[in-house]
Length: 301
Image (cartoon, rainbow, N blue to C red; front, side, top):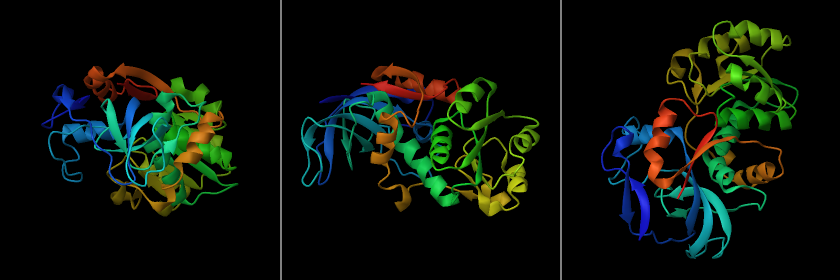
């Protein structure tokens, strides 16, 4: 048996209940891990609340969670790992649990903490994917809205390592931190367009919006082409002729080992805001819904 967080109806964070479930058995290509850390993502909150009911089918009870890191304790046929290996990856069947299944386990570098290892998966792949979809390259200028968040901060750092000039909009409290990563941060809110133009007199070639803060119309004006703007957070994208990026693509399929090594080598920073014991998953969801977090929230089963 395994302790896990599950919900049997959509609703507020209070629907998340600590439960006893049967430990899952790995299928072909899968491994089962004893979870050391499980990332809490905004998508988890949307699924639990029912916002994604039309897009993501659910069969109650649901164990939430997309990403985890832990120690392999059972191996399915053909899986590329062995019992005792320390791994990270995307889960099948949820990660808010003492035991979880990983579809394609990736070796965890020794220098990588459990918290960062678990947190890299979804946000790292998303950042990589949207940069690939934008097609921005060395010598060009990219504006990232919401670089204080997890996807935004990874996208900004990946772009900097590729020789891209990166401008970001962030909260006042994040300016110093983002500047230290090699980007140029300006304060979001009223007047952001002029502040971006001052920071990038050469102009802005591409825009990535991770904020969903109603910035698409002005972003299209800045680039002069809606095809050079992409969002992962603003559902009004189509009204502005802007792409809404969602799901996975082949471009991000094999990037996780690279992201893990970059993080282990100190070339990629992902702030961990707070950790919670498994039984406090509802508190973690409440904190995310209230936008209290300044980095990743992580469960420690």
